[in-house]
Amino acid sequence: MSKYQKLSKEELLKLVEKQDTELESKKYGLLWDREKEPEQVVLDCENNLPILKRITEKEIRTDESDDNIFIEGDNYHSLTVLNYTHKGKIDVIYIDPPYNTGKKDEWKYNDKFIDDNDSYRHAKWLNMMEKRLELSKHLLKEDGVIFISIGEQEVANLNLLCGKVFRHENFLTLISRISKTASDKGNIFAPSCDYIVCYAKNKANIDTSNFYDEVDEDLYTKEDKDGRYRDDVALYQSGLIGLRPNCRYFIKAPDGSKVIPPEGKFWRWEPKTSEKNKALLVFKETKNSPLLDQNGKKAKYNIYTKSYLEERRDKGTKPRNFLVDKKFLNRRGSDYLKTLGLDFPYSKPKELIDHLMRIAHIPQDAIILDFFAGSGTTGEAVLDLNNEDKGKGKRKFILCTNNEGQIAEEVCYPRIEKIIKGYTKKSKNREKIKGLGGNLQYFKTDLIPVERIDNINDKQRHELTEKAGQMIAIKENTFEEVEINEWYQIFENKDKTKKTAIYFREATNKFEELINKIKNDKVALYIFSYNRIEKELFKYLPKNIVIDDVPEPILEIYKEINLTLKDK
Figure 1 (cartoon, rainbow, N blue to C red):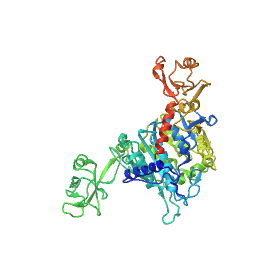
Figure 2: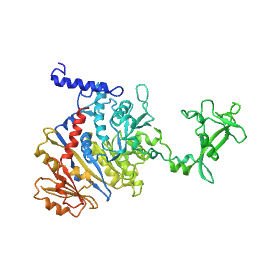
Figure 3: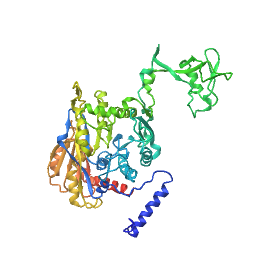
Figure 4: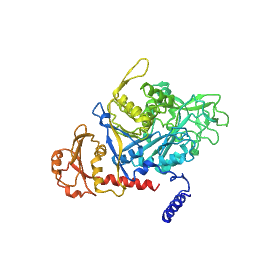
């Protein structure tokens, strides 16, 4: 029986209209069968409200710095919650999703492992990724960036998908990385590299001069009165294309002859730049010069430019989109985990995430999100950067992972705990490694059942309000619970300079009691209402108390997500 036979006329018309719209709008781009098998965790959100439950026994605290966040659960539910708590707050996203290689036991869709025998595996992977990328886009700041590690199987699809979600004009680059060198596996070619797809939320808002890499000081081998320098970069390079014609001109050599690039080739500098920087031109005699003299014969010299370390150190160098250093090899990640006493074969080397965050030069108070957290490499990289800043680094991470194969309980969380608190190396000398310090709050996703997300009854509104406390605490960065009773809940931050209060009822019996407890503090006060509260009614409250309502803002975000992704 055809899958369409049971559909009504109205349902069939709606399906045809949707297909026509897609075909008309897609002159170029990515099309796939989205509806062959919808993802269950997405369908769950049609009649469930995602929330977070705090797991206090897994809290880590070593100092007075801000808390990092660990969320265990399906990342679709985690991202849904984060759309309430962290919309527009994330500086950088790094993710390492399943590569969809077709291998058994690599990743699941609707609780089934997807392998090479599934003819819809690419469509299912795109379904899964599109919804999560759409949710993550709203979390980024306007100048935020996303880095996505991926293999050759899906790199083309992923780039097109990111162009659709983030828009093609926000593409930054595609980084190639040598990931392994010794393997001789593979059907025809031995796979040796993978990729990192890089997009901005809004490229127009990014200061691209902030994207620079550290200078390799070992290249600056010479020295004069002005300091260390290098003079091994030629003024003419055969690969230069697209330069203006005025970049081909004669330069006078020390012996009085004149030199010029071959026909159709150019110097790196315009005439004005060469004249201004005459002192930086270095003429080296050679029998194999690519240049011509004024008679059209092979020149006696090649010309190089002098570059001083101090100046280059200040400016940095443009980051390369090809990573070949051995520190970026996959085995570095898995070997390092063994020294922690952890077994996980697919961990990226933390040097890779270090590198990405360095070249993006993210602020010292940035928030970094990884919603395919795996072994927790991103978390350690953030702690590393803060440690290097010697007290100035206040970056925070949010790690989201499921517990498939106990990865949250047995790999990711233990790793972060060891890095924060310190550990003894699993090696012959049993070296003790000092912890980097830091704090962590651990949460698990949970669902509140409802009949339909767009039709919540009063009882369910009350239930959501009473269970949303941890979400609101995350939103306000006030994790310390001070008090909770049947009427209200109070949180505060570490240094006790801010409180968050949630009043659970519409009845005002205990409202004055709550106000008396918080009136002298800086407070974010959330007041229950069946719809939106009338803020004018609370003008009498002290100005240090800022009010908002609950649960309507949460429900509005959840409804918008549900309706938007349902139409995809």
